[in-house]
Image 1 (cartoon, one colour):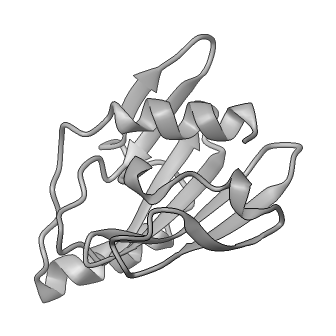
Image 2 (image 1 turned 45 degrees about the vertical axis):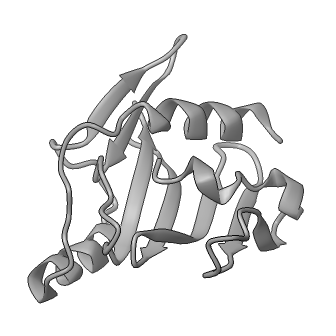
Image 3 (image 1 turned 90 degrees about the vertical axis):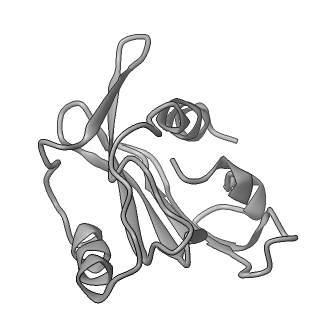
Length: 134
């Protein structure tokens, strides 16, 4: 798996400390709006690393969350988007700067923790489902 994928997923996992989104109609709408965010909100959680800071929003994902979780680089580049259905990752899209874009699709079956489909790469480029939320 490409090093940027590993770093993004592992370091963003340390960000699980702030907001939780629950399953109400207005919050479901909020989750959908997150998917369309092009710029990093001020509530994004910063994770410093060796030379690069990552930002994730929303930080916590409840078991009933429908919507996206986005990972940005410190310069505001939108690096990755994880989409959730009922709090479980349904897909993950990584857009490496100057690199390939990988789109991973996951099973709704919680016993299957690997991606079941990938485009732009192979399934081995996709993080396991247990790595989510970011």
